Image (cartoon, rainbow, N blue to C red; front, side, top):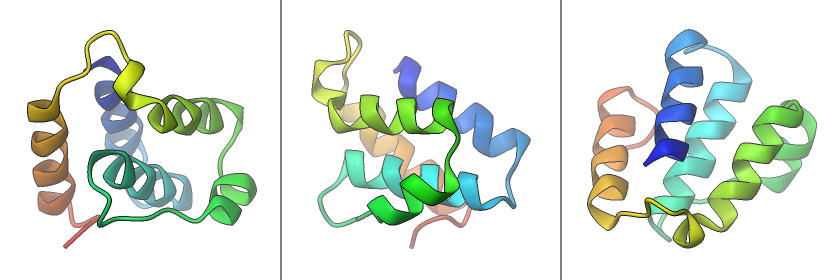
Length: 85
């Protein structure tokens, strides 16, 4: 999914930043209801592009290339990267 690739590119370029942590949390939340993201963190931490990505994640099922399989793979990747457990 394009949205997942965009977020992973940001996380890869800036792995230790607060914005990557918030984007990873938002991505996990968009992939599984077990995970959550703080909207306060979204508001305070992300720039306009990050907020736009979170907005798209909020409507992930409407993405033209939506895929449950890719959501599962994204969760596994976030785990390997240490963003979720």
